Image 1: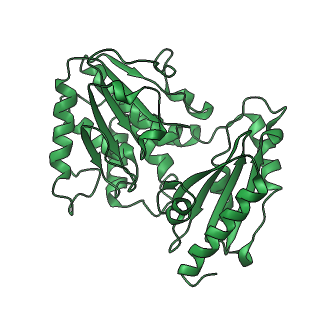
Image 2: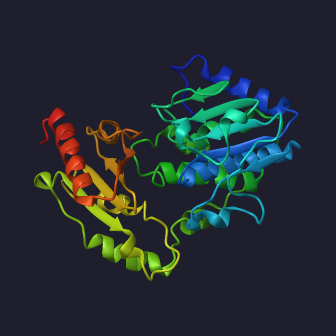
Length: 333
């Protein structure tokens, strides 16, 4: 069977997959699974698939995560819980899709007896007792698939569906440049495990009605600085007032990234004490380079950063300057 990740250039990948599987299968104590703050489809899909696989092995698991509203359909009642103030003695912490341990949400990692770190961010610090980081993987869910393949457990549809969700969300439903043969092969295997792909792909696009009113407001802020090489929009808390339970609109940036002529798209989200920015980039421009300059990180195609304080204009000015420098590096300014 082909690995979900093309590991032809990484001699240790298969060995580390086996090490992770052996460690998880042999752990006698509780296992706490966590992901990054503000979890996305890959974070939830990876942790949920892993939890269900370990549950099938008879492990005592806890998944500490607060899923975004549009992904709650993946979970069962009582399957997730909020953050843990403390870890039971002898806990293994399984940290998924977290590049920086300071962005881990849900449990105090320093209290873990053992920490497994599975991730696909190139900027991952390789923290923990056993770290498997594969930046060539399009999603952490692909690494999780390889681990579950190596566990003494049979795949089921409830495991395969969240795992495929992670792949779908991080590849833009196979539209992003990180989609390759290995990604499509892995997706095909998961579908063979019982995933109703058309239903899942459709369900992932559902949003509450307030989302579309918020979308209209955000699209009204779109502008195209740097001679149209960038597309920017912003979202404030006041724009969300009266719309009910609406997520932060992280996928809004995925819409403006298709503006013709734009190499970079960014959404600035103003909070009470900060401005968060989500950046998407088209080759040869790097969203990762832009956001790392601003103190953030992520992937080449998709990254994020955070500015202290709620000054939207100041944050935008710094962002535009960083975008201009990155465009200049590629003679696109």
